Image 1: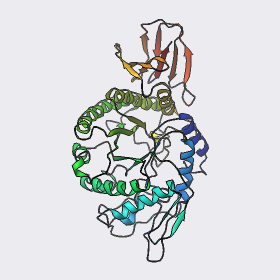
Image 2 (image 1 turned 30 degrees about the vertical axis):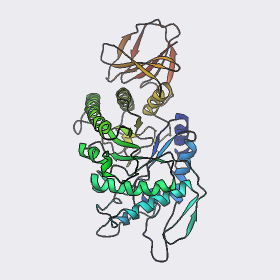
Image 3 (image 1 turned 135 degrees about the vertical axis):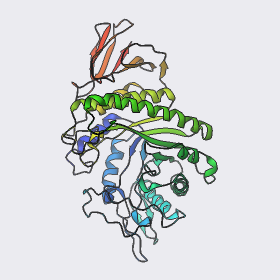
Image 4 (image 1 turned 120 degrees about the vertical axis):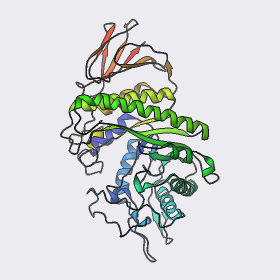
Length: 438
């Protein structure tokens, strides 16, 4: 649905451009092998099989939409032929036909990881140096000279190929060592673990003794999704399940941060997949208010990560649709309009950023709030985690104060903005709002 011929392609990348976000993470993924892998067949003695036709089409749209902002590129899917498998791994001829069978194998055929490192070095050269020389010495010209400030190495390796901490560190070192020669200014983010990440992964990866000399540990990443407590749980219960699991995840973050600060304090943390999953297959069973609940949970996680000093909180994902986690989307895959999750992200991004100061805040009620001192003035973030209205008295003169908000009524429309006329506000169910004082 992000391909150039998609009916929502134009609106999707327009929304991405209008967001103006940094650290935009781009991960071509294995269910679409032709869109994710540049070399689907192993080279022979006389021929190689590099093909960037489908990779280029969406990469170009991404780089154009994020011009002026930082990106985190992650072509996470390694060629299947680089892994030992019982038989060659098949993939659809149709680049846009989904296939979940491509990621196979748990042992690299080249256990030194030089083969996979060479693949990524050529891939990076294609996009940053205008081309590359293949395994047989033939030059392939791309005319791409993108600036790629961050590259993330693989995606959820604890799931994909069941890669151990030891093998991942070995692959990371080989890949980063080769790519660093191509683009010395690029910084590298490691781990990219699924939300069941265990402490031993961090203990091993963040220990510089487990890496080759000169290999940077610029950043680490891991993921979190709020989920239901049980199958067929009613929507009314999601509000408790999502926020309870968010709190459990935040405790894990605090523990991981203690490991990072002890072993590699200069390494940044990017929690770059934050969302909710309810197991919807078709998306037809997702009520409109779900997007507000999901966005409110993201806003809460964003706030708590901000308090901890986490560098990046990335909301997942821009485009979901049937077969690709429709419940995680920020776009309506039928109309191409951004939903409430997108508008909550934009509300946060437009109001808060590096350099802002968190101010001691006290409040009473079934809601979350945090005061900020920003370059643009004093602001208070309000989050309603419950499916009920919450009336809040404001302890200041509302003259010249405004409120920006996203609720179920704003839906797929932009963030609403109103002048405050009373010394109280009423948050609607799952509403996220920012009050600004002059």
